[in-house]
Length: 158
Length: 76
Image (cartoon, rainbow over all chains, first blue to last red; front, side, top):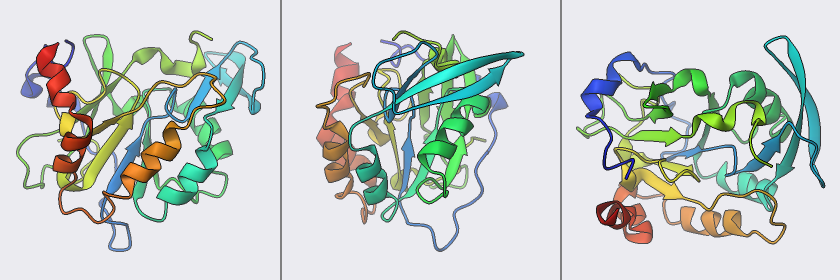
């Protein structure tokens, strides 16, 4: 129902801006834009069993311990897709958390070409929109990607 | 203006959110939310489907046929 009731694009698109550099000729032709939380990993600030990693993040003057589980086959997946696609991670989470996480998932910057964070998203009716498409594209319509805003700092249900 | 600046015929979004694909459902690949199931194989299945998109002229018809998200929206 949320998608059906979205406001007209023109009414929400006023503040968005391009956050990615243009594609280069050596990039793969198709771009694969991946969400992070609950798609590739599960993170929480509460201790969890079988965490694959734990790291500190400071937010608002408070240090949190982020506990991360990696989705099964994450490494297999990234290894397979980075050769075939321009891989972009686009998350509604805060950059301070997502950068630390991605630095650990992809320490050599091998798999993920670009990172986009909450700051790139448009807040619309309590959700964060991720607007994707080229103005120069021949397509007239433009896509919007929306994820819940509660992904910040992994402060969510465990 | 927008943030991605990519050709929609050559862009797919993967997201577990039911809201994820907003105005462009045919660019959106839904994936089940994951929390802790150690037997989850969704990333393997996703990778297999993505192979069909690598050289596509336009990803949208392929995504539309596979996931039929537009049908779900019309029924909502």
